[in-house]
Each structure stands twice: as structure tokens, then as C-alpha cells.
Length: 233
Image 1 (cartoon, rainbow, N blue to C red):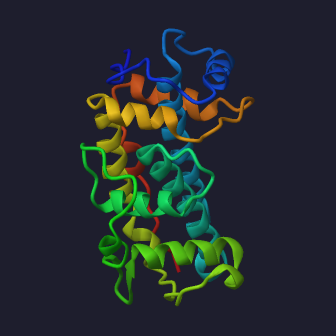
Image 2: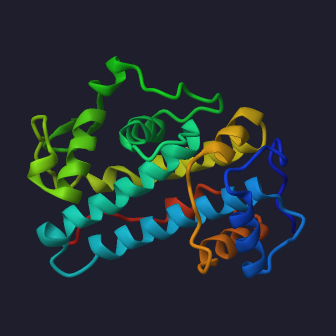
Image 3: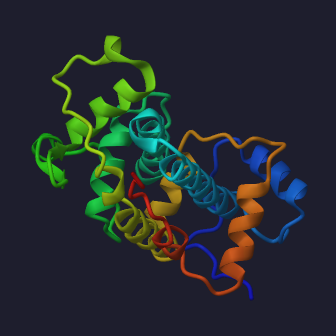
């Protein structure tokens, strides 16, 4: 079963030669264009990251020893999704995180603004049994979990052991919406092509896995609905 083509398979892609090289390494459908290869790879890489989060959350003594590293990994998936949605060509990641976190809970088939409205940055996005988190809180927590206190300028919300379990369903919904939008909206395709993302040219697993999964008729969101990030105490 051949998956449907994206809305515009011929949009310019940054460093298209790298995606073509990966395509040859993976020995997948040679009619796919660089933007399609990039799209499959990104979905597969986000899935890989989320599966790594699953391993940490379900490991022995996950709370609290492994919870911050798990959150840091998760945020890297949000950064990747946000970069694709905005078409960000710069190395900076805060705007990717802002748009990415917001998109998880407010996915839309219409391409969002490339910068998040300031009012949305400070609006409560996630509520756990003990704490509420804004986009700004989630980004500050990402910086703390990745780099430590020295990089955090704002007040840091505490981390709740129920935080990560709030995300699998929204991730699935967001990826499902995004993947469908790529097949219907040229702007989404253009932004994917523009996004500053380089593949590992010797690691084709995310690409192969995603193409094979979709070839079975599986929906993109179902990759993530199977996640369970509730900590086993």
C-alpha cells in the first residue's frame, strides 16, 4: 500500500541532497521527493524520542531520578515538531518550543503563526492534580532539565510526577492533524522544506519504520496513542 502524496511534493528543501542520500541508504520508494522523505523521517524521529521517554518513565525508580531526563527528551520532540510547523531556519529553539507546546493542545489544519501570541505564552496549558503549567513554565522546565539552574531566568514551577502522563494523547492528536495537513496544505509543506533539520546520514531507521508503518494503513496518531507515561511507583 502506497501512502498518499503530500500536498506539494516539489517544494524546495534545505540540503535536499542529504535527504536523497538517506533515501538511497534506506532503499525505500525512489519516487518519493526530499520533502516527503523529510516528513517521514521527522515523524519517525519524534516516535523514537517518545519511545525513549517511555523507557525512562517505566524504568525502575523512574521517579524522581529519571523523570527530569525523560522530560528533557520529550521537550526535544516538541522542539522538532515546532520547527517543522514554523519552518524555522535558525538554530534557536525557544520559538519552536512555544509553538510546539501550544500546537500539542491546539492542533489545527491551518498553518499557525510562526510566533506564539504573548497572551498564549502565559495562559495555562496543562493542569495536573497538583500544579498548572503555562507554555513559559514548560519551556523553563525544559531548560532546567537539560542544562540546570544556571540557565533559568524566570521562576521555575515544580515538576509533578503526573506531568508527562498528560501528553501522549495530545501528541497523537497533534501528529495526526499535522500529517493530514501536510497532505492538504502547501504552506505546511513549504515550512517543512524550510525547517533547519539535518538527518543522520548513516541512520535510516526512523525513515524506514515510518514508511513501513504507514504502508500498513496505520494512522500517524496511532504511533503515539499507545504511549503510557504514567509513573509506576
